Length: 115
Image (cartoon, rainbow, N blue to C red; front, top):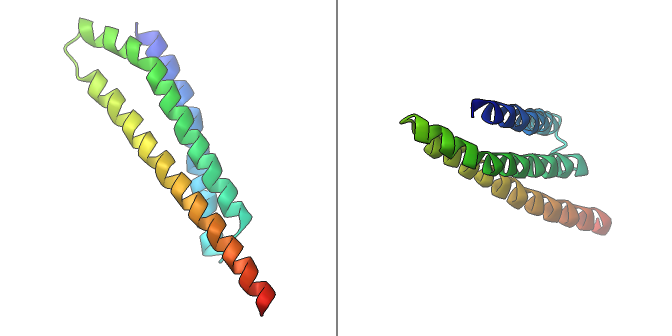
């Protein structure tokens, strides 16, 4: 029972590290005063997709986690649900920031054309 869980956790680490790298790139864009660029929007989009991938992996893992916690009296389902909800919050936050940043870039482009 533990091997499907370990495989799922390792698979879930791949999008986590991709999202972590994209967030570091996003911080680098902010540091270089390029926060309002399409590169930032692309980084936020990748973070959103990675968070959704983590949610999908952990939802597929939940039946194995439930069967494992039946044998042992461990709070594994609560931990799995915590990971799912935390990833959902990150995905929603990244989607909102992506839309706001796209709108700010559009407004900035209109203002640059009028001046």
